[in-house]
Image (cartoon, rainbow, N blue to C red):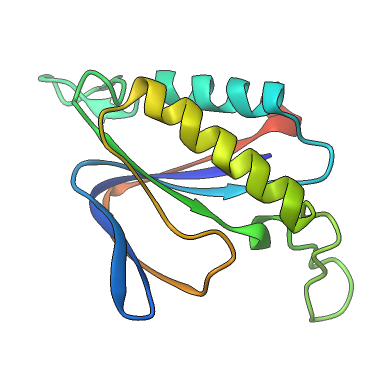
Length: 149
């Protein structure tokens, strides 16, 4: 499982010109799932994301987690995080999870995040989405379950 976490001052996702999710300060999170992922892995990824201390404190140090700043989440499913570009010029997506499995785990992540955060917004699984954000920093973190769990 892969999370691309961007610390944002604002972010939104649109489908067919209509805003389906929008947040102020917090994280815009792109989520990629592969076929070996499980709910247990998803839970550990959410927990790691929750505890990241990447917001600045009163001394300008990245020392605060998202809860400490009252941050929000915008969760967006993105199978292209498992693109394999090693051969040729057209990416292969065979490492991405099947749509049914990926959607189930995406929904599980949303449910888990709703337990911890007061404002969780989402994109629409499988839809063609337009994502807009203001990256605060810029600050972007890649969490890959193969490397951190």
